[in-house]
Length: 131
Image (tube, rainbow, N blue to C red):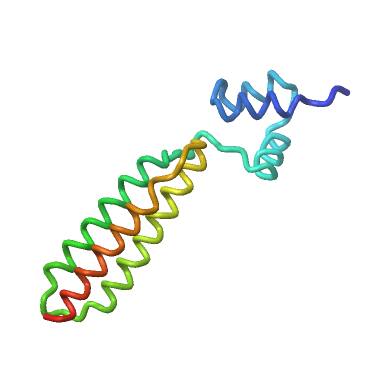
């Protein structure tokens, strides 16, 4: 009995070259064997929607922008919770940028730019606290 070429099967599976039934027939494996290997090794299935890191960064930037606008307009509201949420969003944004840069093997954005953004946000928060 020949051992299936699992590397080739995975490539075809993740590339969605053939339907699963055809994949099993071509490589002489059963559907349960395919499912077992797929689950054990974490293969990316056809129903998974892969999100690009650049899209995530863009979406996080929009969220960050929205939170800053809400903070600017919240004159009478206590801002402690909003500041905490904004801080968490900034940290998440920074981490996404770093991960994206590492994924593409490029230099991440200038840390000075991120510090400037953080300083601007801190100044705005101080201004709101003084109101």
